[in-house]
Length: 388
Image (cartoon, rainbow, N blue to C red; front, side, top):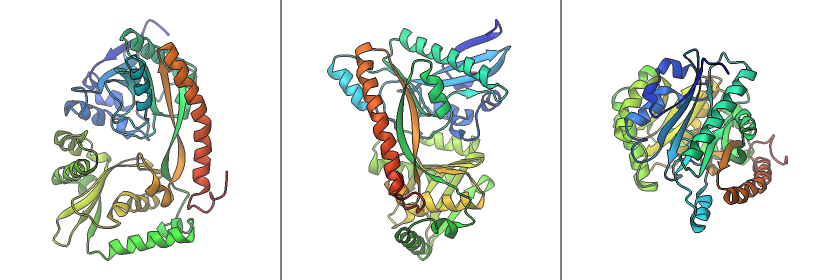
């Protein structure tokens, strides 16, 4: 560390230039790009009632070398690594659990780097900078009287570096589709057991014979009108299943302008050309992320076609490495998505509370390892079945 090294804490993404920020974002982390995060803030989806940004930055000779976007939280909704039981236990003991500090992408359960580093950093320098910033994060949380710090859906390397700085790891899992070099969709189906092949073919055939027009839209195919269409899908789904939506119309209008180059839409229209359903996804490099789905009328199997099969089709055709489709998993698992480990890190300031939670995490870690192995041993992917 030199006199030219400056660590600062910022409250707004507008404190950074988009080009300097995005230079730090790796290929598999599109939701960490400046356009996405700043749109969450300017549309007041974060920073007004909850998810208050506190962005830790490290500059050397004026050049941005590393950032850790953190958020002060008043609850745990929209995080998807669940700690509600911890909060309840603290409450019963008369200890405040909120506010806390979370390192994550708001409302977005995707695995990627949580510590953004300049690509020119060598491994040793990066580790020094990570240690410096994580210690600053921990000092900040303690000085602000926060209960804890949580780094969610981080990389395995970040898990290692965080553990060296006083964080305790947690293991969970998601279901991801992994490309094994398939030539086409039928080549992929050949990997699955017979009953699953039969079910998937039947589902796709029913959609093909339904009279619906299903389009995949990227880049210049995405028009201004699509912001309204997909916001309607999103809002309708949340009103039916989850109550109040996290995102608002302003967010959709902006993201369909500033982030359009990352969007991957699947749109279903009826015979009159009216939009009835679809999925909004994000694409960068060799990675495709399923995000939001909605339908204005119920059509059997349309969800599977728009959220799974069209994404797999595209991934195979364009030789992508991975398709992530977010939280939850039964439908994904039955269609050949594999159970993969998700890492997170936790630091609890309260000594007695931390002892109880850390003991729980240690026990949970072994159980979750067994669960991941057990899930995949029952996979419809023939090569995984029976292996523990």
